[in-house]
Length: 101
Image (cartoon, rainbow, N blue to C red; front, top):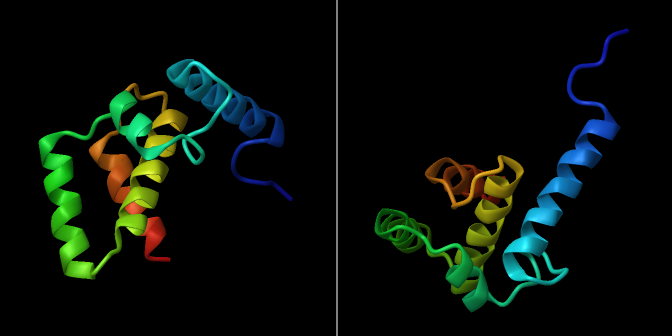
């Protein structure tokens, strides 16, 4: 029986690299889920297009501010897993889709 996907060792390595990126970004051992929102946005600002897209979705789907922040945090983490220095449009869409599950 063959198993698809990455081994636990590879996944663990990616997670450790991602955490280290976050520690380096914030200058302390803290991850995207725990950093104050203002600090998150200073370190990883959204583009005007990304902000506009999130605002339109928030209005259309009646999202609270808390939900929007959760999506931004998740998008930052997805971007970190992809070794992207900025929050990508793709990671925002992925975070939105994961929020709807």
